[in-house]
Length: 286
Image (cartoon, rainbow, N blue to C red):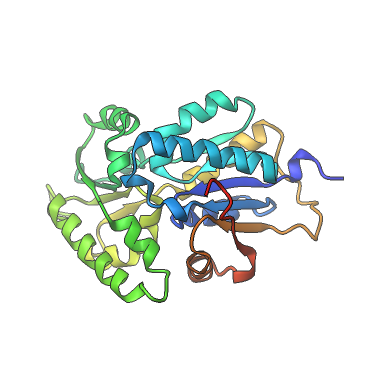
């Protein structure tokens, strides 16, 4: 008989970026089942209003609870976390909840020059939550914060066969534009030697960034810390799966409110997952 421990962990993002967090979660929690929802029909969140983002976040959380009986929720989107995680915690006090935020504190520890770049969406950069996070570490390093309009969308579009070439060209252009705007990268005194990827989408262009910035710049993302925190919360709530699950249960289910082909391509390209575990959920709030 199924128990709460065998219920899936819900993970959602505005699109495919949260797959980078899902990848870390699967590595950290190999016995768990996951339900991932990409709200592609409304992506990217980073350029939407805070009210809209809060509405979508609550609607998706309610859907995952009602339809998939999730035992925990990972908000794998920096923008949604900044806009709505406090409200989610108030509405669902018994649900283990994990959000993501730009990894400024780990970056301070890693940086040797004390000069750190931060790439994030406009929604994240403009949020009160990010302002508080930045204020908490601003005395410890010099931060160059760059809002990267259009980058998350271009990464989304890069998975669609009919848009892939144009999207990749746009990604290259935007990465060059935004990194140049931040200043000089490198290991010399005064250089930016650490770059925080403040959007889960950006993990999927690490190779492009590495080619631009060279081998001495450290790229910092949030997937592994989020996975460890999820593990800690599940253990504290005695909700960890023992590994004795029903063999017929699907370990991962991927859903999208938007283009199914894009999610299938992203899952196969970045996680090595088969297309048949993906499904469209167009009825989810239209």
